[in-house]
Length: 282
Image (cartoon, rainbow, N blue to C red; front, side, top):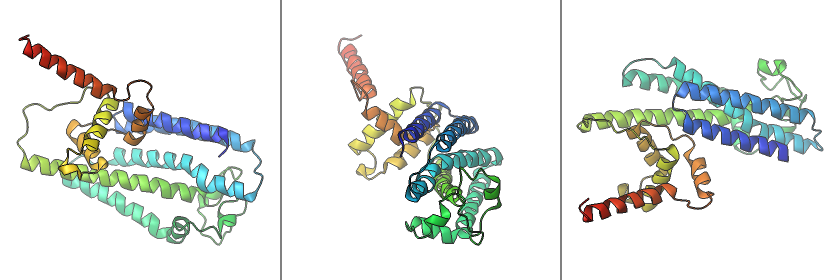
């Protein structure tokens, strides 16, 4: 990957991580994300317009592996925005039916694109010269009409399909997580007495993620058998908060300068101070 493109992708991921952490409203988060992604794709387009690929292999790699990393994010956030804006008001049964219908739509896409899906997922390369070289399209390969309306200096016949596959993986994960959260909420409401006051996390999301990883590392949930993603989903549910791309946040915590466990150090000091005050009768 060329340095300029690598920097664009890295900056985009950083900006999206920040948006996921700082904006709780789903639709507003998507709007901000889409705005950032569009600007980045325009910048990428400028870079490619000034780039002459040295070989077909280099061009194929860009349109098969690199560009979809950008466009898949646009597809994902745009789809997420539509899903949440169209979500019906009603009880959990209605919302679950809605999310399940969205999963069915994803399956329909995979069924319609099954041949290419198998080709891509299997790591095949024998048709790459037709799929991922500009102006090398084959009309017999069930092309989408949108391809003929795009800038074919910045598109091949199938790079969008790769991006769609990557985006649909993220959409499926999102929908399945939403269904799990609904089920957990229903189970919790049926089996537990509601506390008099809801506890809202008012610390930073970074601090909560630091605590999340610490508790998972200590193995305090289900005798250490709980997956990190399950604990994260539980935190999101009980605190009514979105942790966003918490894996990336953990990476940022790891590369902190100085105290890498800043929040854990702080709460330890606060607890010790309270104990000392109690010992002294304060």
